[in-house]
Image 1: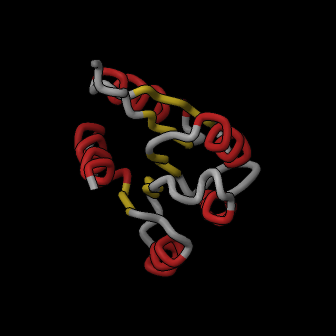
Image 2: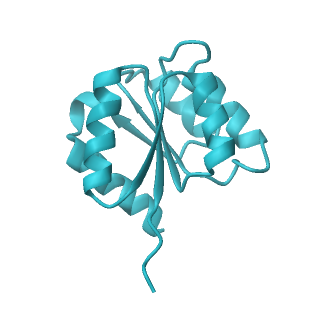
Length: 126
């Protein structure tokens, strides 16, 4: 029996970032769902029920922090692990993300796509 492919939702407003992660995660054997703003990310999280969400903080229409708040209050999405993937390294934002239920926090500038995939695999194997 074939192993079920894990589904990753990438919510990022930068098209180049979405394209890179779509390619890299697909090549690593994941199914990828993309969203370009907070509202679309919430919608797709509820429709697709991904195994993990990579969520940017600075997003149009609805911030990643606000998306996280809604995700964690919704019975369908509250248990989906969320990794914040952002360039915001401010301690107050990091603490807020964790207090709202984020499972991890990755600075975009500090991780290559391969390292991000490895971090996602670690979270999915828990």
